[in-house]
Length: 358
Ligand code: AN7
Image (cartoon, rainbow, N blue to C red; front, top):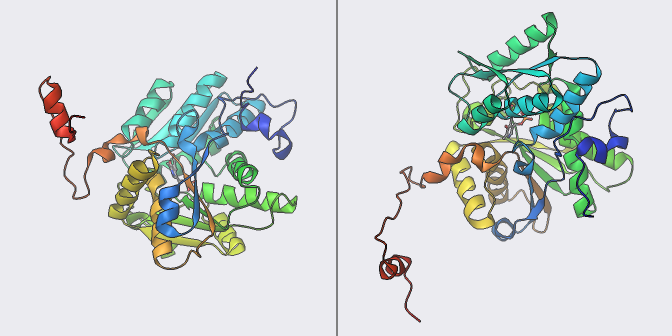
């Protein structure tokens, strides 16, 4: 019988703080593909691999942390969880809560989350509340509620989330046989940046690897507090997932940067969309805009001469393109892609396709 991937808690039980008393709330997350990206290797001279986290059950990397956070919450008797979200966390929290038979309350910024994510949170019976504010406001309210009411916070300020997410680094090491030279991730709250660093740190400690990858994190130019060194009051970017002005894991991420000789950079929305097109059209991987920032970051750093030829590079792309598909229908000059419409006529279709009869 074919072996089925059992989700990160079972696959990495010996690397996580779980016991026989922990109920395993899983949707089979993790075990995502690490895909060689020849087009990006040719463009940069590095050996580039893409860790496609859109292949998780709810379509983003958040599921790795959510299986852990919800399992531990249920172990401790929680009947309700709460989170603030730019979308993906809310989709994941609602799905895992549904699976566990508990309630999820999700706070999102009004009008600023992608349709696919909103649909998921609603479909999974999340108690969805839109705040007239941004993500940072939502997180403040979620924290206050968790402090004063019987609801369990599952944002990445909850260490269980980071613990679950570190398993992605284990998977990379299993495929490559070592850590890469560079690891690129999008940065919003900087939880995932922190989680990969923790995963690689643990691999190094047990000699599963020979090195710590340089951790390279990227924020959108209009939402780049870690690059600017101060909180951004009104963050703005088309990459709504990372529209975050006051990252929850700021301090932890700075430590990870120092330890890994890492880097934080910013990328304009135009460059994010350009990278989105390259990844879709030349590699065949469809992601949401925030995820394309890993690709844009690599292209920018390679152009700056900062990526030695032959380096092994892993890019995490965090969320599936179907979450927020509208961006694919815009051309480089910002106009809408126009569909080609023809009659039911073989010769006419052949003509449009430029085919010549054999
Ligand atoms: C696709 O869902 O913060 O730096 O509330 O959805 O660990 O925050 C999402 C973040 C990158 C940034 N890519 O990760 C949320 C939320 C995608 C994301 C990030 C997010 P962190």
